[in-house]
Image 1: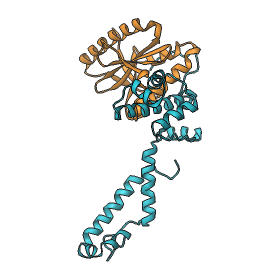
Image 2: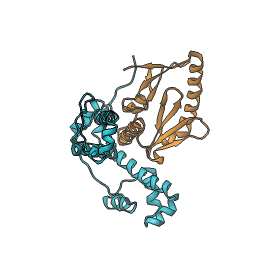
Image 3: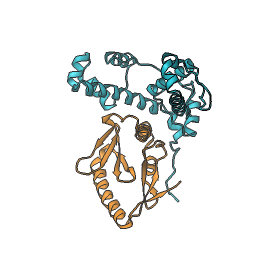
Image 4: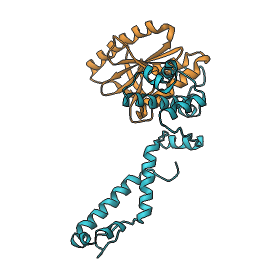
Length: 135
Length: 180
């Protein structure tokens, strides 16, 4: 069974917390970045900019940049032309980035998000909290 | 220990702030908010707004979806159509990076800045110095308008003057300088 933890996202420096999900100590946001082809770098930078804005919570990013996911409570995706970044809003913690992927793999990734959410909720129920790791 | 593969150069907060994409996203968000606020205030749908301003519905959708690169002429036309003057402000990137490193924040709230500048002007105008409750008499320019009140409620007015100063001081002190 996977062990979950959180780590603050380095682009989120404002009052609103944005975390990366760690699965067995693997940072899912880093993993997404590391496995992206170079051609997607500008789109990844746009995600980082959106995370920074979300954290500042001054004004919301355009609607087309974020979309709530139907069928999964408190889940949403950040969108760019070719990429998707999936996150949950976890009570008492905040935004939690769970995984990223290509738009063409969206259906599969949303199924993965759904299952991650369930596992995460089970761990919170069992342990009462999620560990927050430092760098 | 947090594991992550490191095959390529990773994006850092510093490199993010130096990337064109970061600033493009901020401008897109400003545009989105400007249009969205106008639509909310006037209870308009995209199509109605497009018709009112003489833009295509497609263009309004692009702004609201944040998925368009904008021609300057079109961007300015959109802003002025909505009754907004689009200021363009440039700041040295080194100062932005320093502010970020110092946890001072990089987003500028121009409305807040204007309000603070007005308060500074007010302080300059009134030549404010912190009043002292032990002084026999204190003088503020506005007091001359109410000589009898000042005489009758001298101590209360002194207290108010101190409170007033402290409020202004508290508001202004945190990080504010005249430099934007």
